[in-house]
Length: 134
Image (cartoon, rainbow, N blue to C red; front, side):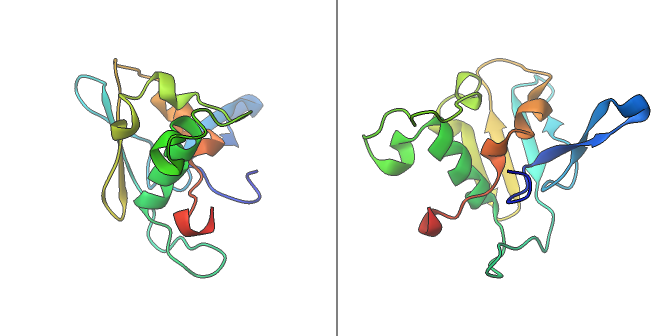
């Protein structure tokens, strides 16, 4: 899937071949709030879809919602994406826990503090999806 899209965070081979988290679609790893319940990512500028359309934070938000809270984007059916990973849903405050306050910022609001959220941001569910191409 990494040949088809870029998640917020990715991996490179670190020292001794141990994978290391690095920013990918995001400019940097996530910025956690003091209480560890809000994580903010700023998207790199100039990232485009294959048709030349700029990638926005709303595209990342839509991707997370369609995998974790499908009813919020597809209507009441299906309530669960069959076979789709819903790892983020257990941490987020609900569909409103993913915000796109501007075209380059994605904010995740968590039920509880979670210091390892960057690992979740590396999942393919953060690869942007345009709603009009879904």
